[in-house]
Image (cartoon, rainbow, N blue to C red; front, side, top):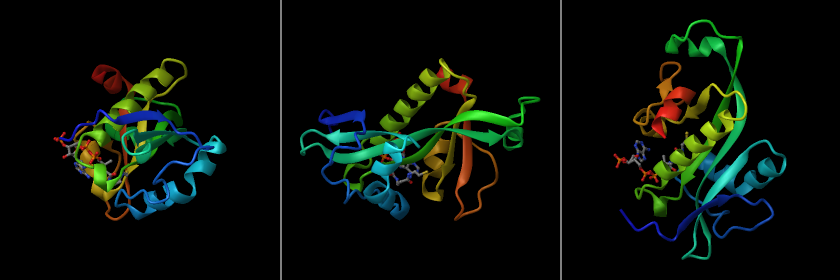
Length: 175
Ligand SMILES: CC(C)(COP(=O)(O)OP(=O)(O)OC[C@H]1O[C@@H](n2cnc3c(N)ncnc32)[C@H](O)[C@@H]1OP(=O)(O)O)[C@@H](O)C(=O)NCCC(=O)NCCS
């Protein structure tokens, strides 16, 4: 694994121009387009929050990011968890987007971002009710999440994303 000493995680600042944000390439076209065109606006509108990895050895180059928001899902989506009766709508945090630039992949940065998402979700759940962490996994990233404890909420129907979930108690136990 390469040395990540120069990589820093910071809160995304929508008023700032990040080096390489427009050319960010995580090899997922939809995510690249979102980073180049919609990310600033989405954060400015408080529709999600974003945390970004910058390479301080490379003019604070934008090398990875995630966005997270409040969300809710129908309780029937959680029937696979067998948690007994639940109210109709369940409050969750949602990992909306996650990506690492192809030049920086394979050195633990995706894992580092996911760990930070988990910490942030647990911290938020200590303040307001959050039942767990939800995401829609792209086929190419399904195994990445599955190996980290996320449970599919329905069967995989490639190319549609798979809704995945991890309960807040599992996250608390993991940190
Ligand atoms: C998924 C992604 C964020 C992983 O980033 P990364 O920095 O390369 O991942 P890491 O180096 O932290 O890898 C951590 C582990 O996950 C594994 N891994 C990485 N990408 C994976 C993938 N797509 N599928 C399965 N496993 C993956 C690595 O082999 C490594 O395993 P190890 O801990 O046993 O060594 C990155 O590949 C990416 O940006 N993908 C395109 C965008 C995307 O699909 N985002 C998710 C949309 S839901």
